[in-house]
Length: 391
Image 1 (cartoon, rainbow, N blue to C red):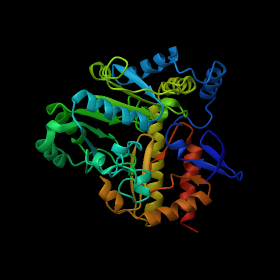
Image 2 (tube, one colour):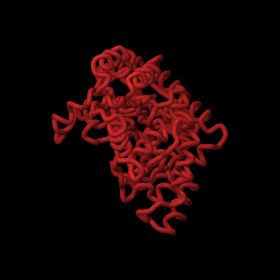
Image 3 (cartoon, one colour):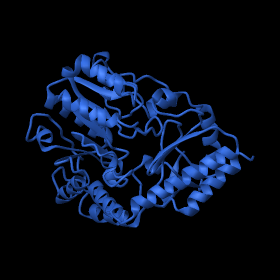
C-alpha cells in the first residue's frame, strides 16, 4: 500500500483510489489527516527552524500540558519515538532500583528495543516469530514475559524474585495483540505488587495516551504508575515520544542524575508544535464523549452485520480503539488472540481494501477511530462490511 495523500478520515493511494482510513498512521492522527490547526502550527514552527539541538520554550509548554493531564507526573523528558520512550524508561527503572529484571506481558509491544522483543505483539506477532534475530540470549534472560491479565502468575513471580525485579511494563489497555482490556483487579494488582516489592510500575500509553481519555488509561482506571511512556498523539502526526513520572525518579536522568539519555532531535520544535496544537484541539468540550459514541456506533453496527450474516466474531473496544477478532470465544490475552482465525481476517481485510476501506493489515492490531470519522463515514463503513458478505 503506497499512499499519496490524506485528508480528514480518508487517504488516497498512489493510483488515486480513495479509502476510508482506520489506521490513521497507527494512532497519532486522532484529529484526522491534515487538520488545519495542526498544519498551521507545523508551518509556523518550520519557518523558525527545523531543529536546534537545544531547548525551546515550546518544549516546556508541551511538558506542562502532559503534567496537567497526568497528575502522577511531575517531570517530562521528550524523545523521538515511543520505542525510545520505553527504552529510556527501562534504563531509568534499572538505574533507580539498582536491579536488572524486567517484567512484561505476552503480546504487549513496547517498541523494538532489545529488552522488549520477548513474546511481543504488533509486527512480531503478525510475523509469527518469538522475538527477533539479533537479540542476545543473555539480554533476553533479563526479561520475563507473563500472560496478560494473569495476576496470579505475576504474584508468584514476585514471591520468588521480587527483590530482583526493576519494573513491570504494561500496556494498560493492550492494543498490539488486538485490543485486549484489563480484567477487573489486574492493573490494581500490579500497582500493589510493585509498591510492595519496591519495583517501578510503567504504563506504556503510547497508544492509549490522550486517546481513550484526556488522561489516558491512568484516568480511566484510576491508577498512578511511576512512569508513563507516551508517543503518537503527543506529536500530532510528527515523530515524538516522551516519558513522564515522579520527580524523585525522573531526576535520575542526566544531566541531573546518572542515568544517561540524549537525542539530537529530542523535543524537535516542529513535532512539539504539532503536539501542542493537537492537545489544544482535544480539549474541546465533549470531544471524548463524542469519540466514545462514534466507537460504540461502529462496534454496534459491525456486530449487527456479522450476526445477520452468521459470522462469529468478538469485537473488543475502548474509546477510539477496536479490534474485530474472528472468533467465537472471548479474547482476554495473547493465547486467546492467537486462537482467532487470522486467515478469515486476511480475506476480510483484502475485500475491505478492494471496497475502499483501509484497515490495519493484521488481526493483531487495533482500528483507530478519530474525530473525522463522522456518521457518514461510519454508516458507509458498516454498509461496505454488509455488502462484501453479500458478494
